[in-house]
Every structure is written in structure tokens, then in C-alpha cells.
Image (cartoon, rainbow, N blue to C red; front, side):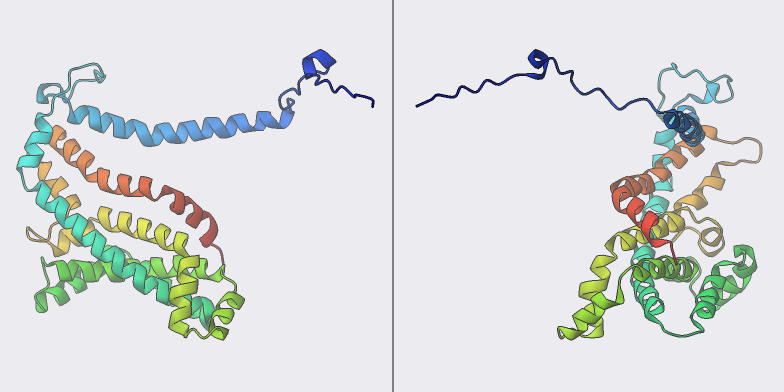
Length: 295
């Protein structure tokens, strides 16, 4: 019997060199301007926010000092002043109004967008344009008629009144987005659900809607942010009871001075909820925005 000895030879002992990294390519030089541009955009977005937060944490005597002393000890008196006022009530109003508006808009947009995506008519594009045209006019044109209607039926400074306006204001945008997401779902998938015995509503709820989940989350995120930041309609249609966070910002502008610290403190607290909401939904938001806005 012949014994065969097997010897394991490492690449180093065999004289073979380890595979080198990715070879340099001149094409990689084109990535440098892209990274520089992304860095510039990030700085443009973050530097004003950092300045706002730094001034909010600065004593009143140093609000106008330039350049800003970034190493100055932090002072939280502006935040304490804001939290003692009506700001928390307005912040809670914004959260309630934005959440209810988002829920209603997403439900109606999903049904409307799905119906438009499956519509087989030569007038489909005209109807979609008519839906989008509701967002084309400036808010200042519709403010007075809306205020007169709301005043005549007692909906000024009420949750119902401002939520109804926000639903109508954001519905066209939501339908347009969901229409694009449902177009990406093959009709054959829904037809297979119908052949399995599901009703049209069952196909929409159990097949189409789960497949467009990333689009639903993307739409909900954008509608929430748009509703949260809306100022004009809230300023016209609300007062103290249903006033939202953006309507409190002008109160820091006095006749002879501006309370920069409290104003920036209120703004810092006001941007936290949509930022947190966007961070939590960033995965689905990026997937939805990259995949649904096509026709």
C-alpha cells in the first residue's frame, strides 16, 4: 500500500503573492468632485443648524457677538423660557394634526393612486393633471375663501378645520406618489390574486398594499414633514386652541428687538420630531423615492 502525503502549502511558502487591492483606475478620479459636492451640500445644510443651536445655548448678552464663540459654556435659559410658555401646547397640536392628517392622506392616496394606476382610459392623464392642479395655486389665493367658509361653519381655530385643509392640501401630492408606486406592481400579480378567490378589495389590501409598503412609508414621511412645517394656513385658520408650532415663531419678534435665543430654541425643539421620524424611516424613504416616482 502506497501512502500519499498531502502537504498544505500557504501562498507565502509557495511563492505566490497575495492578491493585491483593486487596481487604480483613472475613472476613480471622477469620484472626487462628487464627494466634494456632497461635502459642500452637507455643510450648507448642517452649518446653519449648528449656528442656530449654538445661539440658542448662548446667554442673551452674547447673542450679537460675532464671530460666534463655540467654546463658550452652554446656557439653557432660552430653552427654559420656551418650555414655560405656550410652546409645548403648540408642539403637541402640531404632532396631533400632522399625525391625523398623514393617516387620512395615506389611506385616501393609496386607494386613489391604485385606482389611477389600474385605470384604462384615454382620459387618465387629464384626470391625473386635474388632481395635481389642486397644488399649483399659491396658498395666499385660497386663504381668504377658505377662512370665510371655515368661519361660516364654525371651524376656525379647531382641529377639524385645519386637518380638513391639510388633507385637501396634501392629497394630490400623495395620490401622485402612490400612483407611481402602484404602476411598478405587475397587473398579473393582482390577477393571480383574483383567480385565487380574493375580491378586488382583498387583492388591494393583501397583495398590492404590502408590495407598495416602501412607497406608503415614503409618502407618509413626506406628508408628515410637509404638514408639520406648514405655516400660512395654520397662521390664518388657528389661534390659541389649535395653533401649531410654526405659528409660535413670529411671537419672538418684538417691536424693538428679536428674542434670538428663545426663537432658535423653539426652532431647535420644533425640528426634532420630523428629523427623528425621517431617521427611523430613512431605509424605506430612500427605497421609495428611488423606485416610485416614475411613470
